[in-house]
Length: 220
Ligand code: DX5
Ligand code: ZN
Image (cartoon, rainbow, N blue to C red):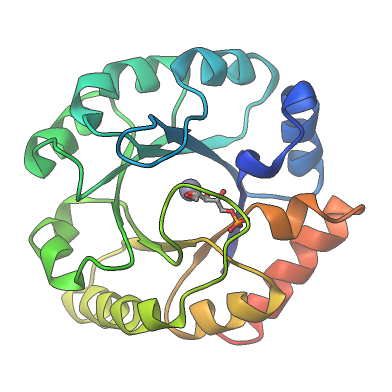
């Protein structure tokens, strides 16, 4: 099964709550919330206070993608704000082991994200301790970039490793996902697709979510 996680980075922030509800109505499985600190990435978005407000108007699974220098320091803030799945970057300054444990202590799911240039081998020691690996298919920082096909070897390697170890770890892709690139990612083992511009640019969100899911499932 393919799950769809719309990236709120592409929503109209004047109507963030309504846009989240619209994506739920459209059949999205979770909401992808991109937190950027203008340090780990050259862009600044929103933090825990905004997520806390959104939590009041949505019961959806909150898939929070931390693109921040020191995720460990903020684990509790984001968990309290309502994150259900908290993903941090392996390239951040926080110790991965400690960060995984801190997220687990909050009773929520853990994800580790890899930038396009980070080899899959670096996440292997943590594979049996996480719920999800996020393979970035663009350089983190901005929506609307083009999908990087060279990240697919890494996705495939992780997919095979998960299968051979008998683990139930989700594989998420994020960046440049369209009906076409969704097929490529699904064929290499992705089962959670993040999409910002490809979904929010459409008039009919229900059709956009269904088309994306169907096109990925046709390639699985
Ligand atoms: C980029 C973010 C993505 C972004 C995806 O750093 O992590 O979640 O919003 O946007 P699209 O789907 O437009 O590439
Ligand atoms: Zn993201």
